[in-house]
Length: 523
Image (cartoon, one colour):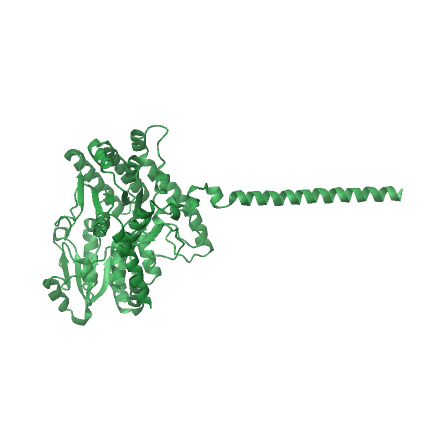
């Protein structure tokens, strides 16, 4: 029966695709690293769904394994002049290093958005690109929700748009501002959905702190808005995000805490999943050496890899040497300290087929930075994790991993070989972690529609219906005091106090009258 129902749902979405004419869709990608990977996949899926996709891409990608094959959709690259680009690249490198070392995180993020605000100013000044986008007459635009410049581009174009959130939904709770704080942890709070009294107090206060920080971030685009929008028609950046027809979120309840969702929010966790390919023979030969012990996969992300210090590499290498498993580690030869001897059970590689290795039957553990794409891939294949989070959403992701017993995390600042080795052995040997990872895998795989089918199906739905006005709650248009019924509360409080005051006054008057009547009678 379940299989029949799933087939009917799939058939329904396929029928919608066949009946719908190909739409002209613009995807925008101005962020690099994992963000590029996600937007590339989204563009591929929409193209495969029968739509005419054009992607506006800032610069080019230098990620290993990407850029070798020409994408099936149209790509328009835009660049800065070489001298400006070099200056911006150096600035970003310094800011990324600040984040990796844990210094002044919010202050650094503000500076990063100031950088993106300047970059946005350059893009909006490119008349050739803006004119092309206007004349192309796209039916729909899709971009990342943290790519605030794209919101301004769409406002200029006057087009309907869809947002893609590469992180957990809590990252954008400030923009949505409709959060039950009693059990939905605020981003950055370090809390789970099971809060005691003091946890709820902390969560409540941190919501206002997050709001303050987000306002400071959005203000970095004020000068760009003033320059490119006429006075009287200048948009408020936070209001622009509420105009989105749909929000696609790059996770699901196999990972995220259960929480209420608006009808126009769709979870598509596992979107990057692709058919598993055989791994190269040299990797297979290495894994075979360790027999039933299996192997550990280590990949700390494209940015974090750059900032692995000699001390961190040394401690990790010493920890791996104590494991009976083989270790396949994404670490460039150029970053390896010359005075550190590679452990005999460790193989380092500049690039590795992460998804294919996570699907390998001999994998026992995934050591990760806790980025959303990596966590999603581990869940997809039921692999327990040890996380070494660096920055951004990574610590928050690992809180959810720990809460669901899929793994544990270690702070990079306190990473030592002995405790790291002990932690890895615990996660590998304690069956609770593997069982929880497999349970999350079942939740992910048992959904009646794949993430790709959900993405294409919902895009087709709003194209057919002319938008998603029927999915947007009226709350998006209400002022905050109405949303939280403060006006009702104050009215009822005033009415209650007024009634009590009137009753007291009447009672006092009656008492005085009776007292006066008694005195007259006595005389």
